[in-house]
Length: 79
Image (cartoon, rainbow, N blue to C red; front, side, top):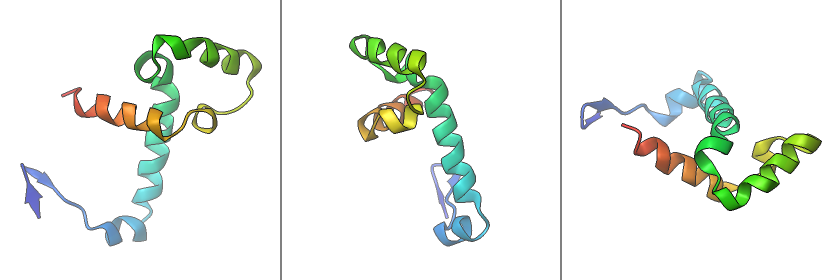
């Protein structure tokens, strides 16, 4: 199937050949890299710096779905 020139992938095919794991790992990696420059609001940067200094946890463990959604929205508008 094609929508807007982009081929849609069958979800079952993705799960069967492990591409879903690769996709999720890529999103999490990008999230960890982009969090301070792209996702966080200025008021959230002090907490980010504290987490980085103390190496308390992975960014994905500290920041939740609202931050992931911010990243997705930014990616959509990067075209």
